[in-house]
Amino acid sequence: MDDEQIIERINELADEEHSLFGKESAGKATEADRERLKRLEVTLDQCWDLLHQRRARRSAGLDPDQASVRDEKTVEGYIG
Image 1: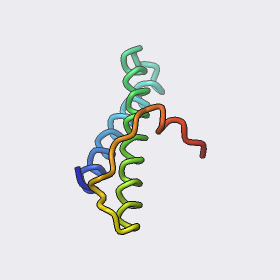
Image 2 (image 1 turned 30 degrees about the horizontal axis):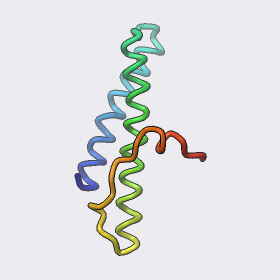
Image 3 (image 1 turned 120 degrees about the horizontal axis):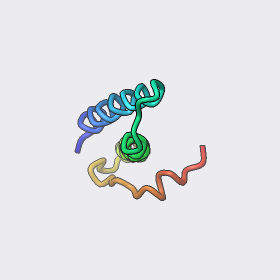
């Protein structure tokens, strides 16, 4: 997956997340919607992390295709 594909995926996930936030705000979200929202947040974080890894590798003169999706525990464990 190249940078453009990752960005496209991020945009798709963000659109779905926005839709689910709207349902939640309107009081129409189901438990399944809330669970999906939690998964979306993790998947978005993983996509952003992968994109950052690819850019960092490229900047360092390394192969960006050697970047890989990190597990949820790693990505969600970052302290900002």
